[in-house]
Each structure stands twice: as structure tokens, then as C-alpha cells.
Amino acid sequence: MNGKPWTDAEIWLFIALYPDMDNKKLPRKFKRTTFSINAAAGVLGVQKSAKYCANLAWRSRLPIVGRLYRFPKGHVPMNKGRRRPGWFAGRMRETQFKGIYIHNYLTDS
Image (cartoon, rainbow, N blue to C red; front, side, top):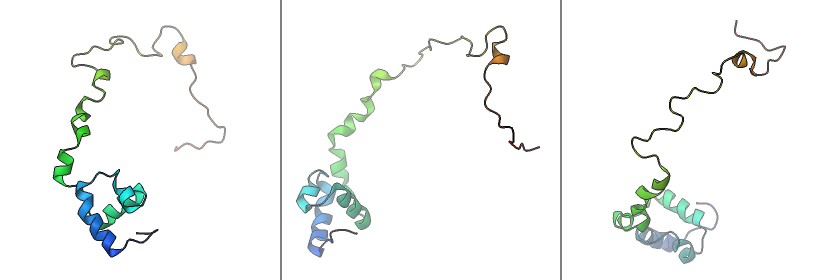
């Protein structure tokens, strides 16, 4: 862990508090950045407890986020059965832009 060194007392306190304390409170408690707290958790191999994860209020909201903007089952797209662009009658297909070709480009053949 680079930057401000962690003392042994801080490390033991961090290991004790991290599993059950909110990540917004930890930086204030240790007077460090959020990045430093996350890095220390990764280096020390500390993870949030199952009890803490079960009590998170936002986890219950995840399944409903964006539900209003999803297509329901059986939804028929408004352009179903219509032809794709470029399939019109006449010479449109053969005269539309095909890309830029450089005069000295080498092909595989």
C-alpha cells in the first residue's frame, strides 16, 4: 500500500470495521481517500460480510430499475415487416456510396 503508511493498529481496526461498516464512513474514520480504503481492502483481502450485504436497501431496487423502459413480452416492433434501408426500387442500391478506395492499397490476392 503506497501513500500514507498504515500503522498496525489501523490495519487491525480496519479489518475489524470494514466488513460491517458503510464505505462512506470509513474514509472519515481513517482520514483517507475512498480509493485508499478500497485498495487496502483488496490488499488485505477483506470483504463485506453477508449480513451487511443482505441489509443493503438498494439491492431490493435493482430488479425494478429501468422496468418502465423495457419492451414487454410479445411486443411487436413498429418496423416489423418493413424492408431495410437500401432495398428500394430503382438504381439507389448500385449508386449509393460504397466507401473510399486508396489508389495504392494492396489486396490479399
